[in-house]
Image (cartoon, rainbow, N blue to C red; front, side, top):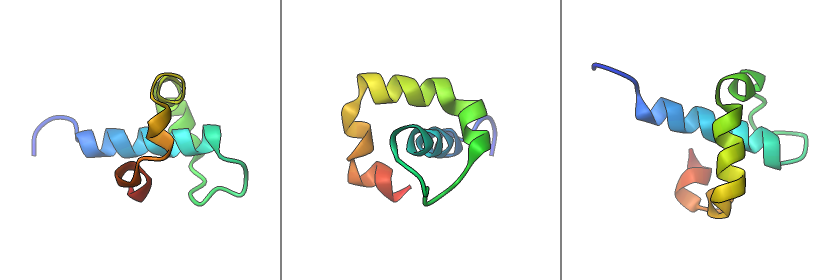
Length: 60
């Protein structure tokens, strides 16, 4: 395997999105995801509202 794992980047972003848009208690409490992917998650929340309800993304 070479390079960056796009799956890992996507999951990290979705974990940060979970922390931003959902109230406590979080299913996965991953504060590091906010540090690493908070900007990307905020962008998703603003520009892709379906990102919170897409079943494939929720499953990750």
